[in-house]
Image 1 (tube, rainbow over the protein chains, first blue to last red):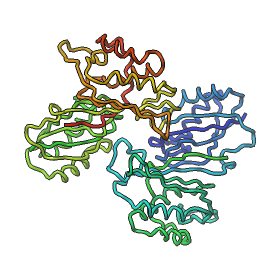
Image 2: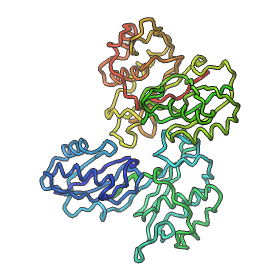
Image 3: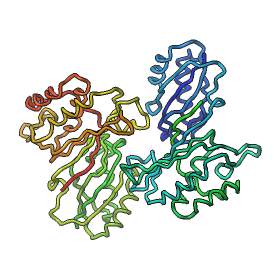
Image 4: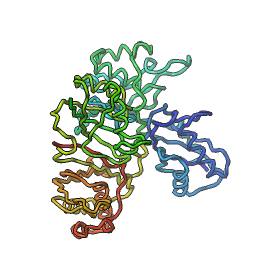
Length: 246
Length: 246
């Protein structure tokens, strides 16, 4: 029986989503719980993709197979009682045997949170504390150049020679909080994202906001297909996997 | 020289504001840092009041004396570099020698955050995860009965016989987040608050929201002057000291 689940997590205290032999990971914690539910037989979960250490998820998705049929509501309850309270299983459905939570993804949305105001210790692990005003209008213009299909080699760790660096960003948004003008949220909806791609795009947008790079230079940076052209990687704690679409 | 500071903190990893011999506290951490700045001489800080373990502060205020005059901006920087990153000194001013951060308080505002939606692991330590819909209108009516001058003995731990339980709540607000209708913030502006008073008032409001108590019964509960009449204490993690006025 194949199951498909939606779950959220606070990535602060994890070494990323993906299982590792000695480190605490989201996948590791959920698989440990599933093994107990599955009569002590190992269960592999297949997520829509990994998230790095410190990155959070509102709606990560994954599938897994169990040896016996289980009632979904009961399964949610058992799982939530076995996993740490910074991970939460929101929903589980039965799915067809050929459904795959990674291969069948059609789009993903990531959001990135930036605080341009005074350092807020309460949000320490949940936003990038930039602490200075950025030129938000110029950032919004730069953001629009990232939309569409591009080779995003300048925005990833280029280590695999044969990798296809083309991705399509369907829509971007830069939202300024009306209650707190120092807070901005940047949203990226795309068919897929390369490793560090969102954080590298945000890093570039910050340099645009600082006036170091002009918004139209984003075109040259994309065309360069060279990581060294695109500035720094924004911190993990500001990044959230918001949704995965199928 | 007397200094007056505004600071914020994430109360999650502290045993409350007030110094204790063996536990990690906000006051303990700041005093440790101030001692270094003050030529290894002990500095006592006097805050507007304590906050309990797990309670957060956006703008806590305190005064302290240093043996030598220091530039306020430099003092902020030195202090912030010495304290943990879940405490942050926002502002320091020189004040008159007879200014007292506790005795001179004219009002305080506390806010309490409640999530009536699905459990959110990312906000685990920052709101009360109630997970069910409450009758918000009835809660708002109940809240209004708490405004004004009352004996709040029903809302505190009554252990000191001669204590004056009269306090005045100047204004209350119940705000429903327009972006997330499941999220409510309750604000209490008052001349002073007894220990656990805000959390006990919120606990009662939740029982009103659940339909267990009618809003107008708040009057009887106030008049009873008996802790046993007023229901449970809401969890610390939802509470924030928002501001202190002088």
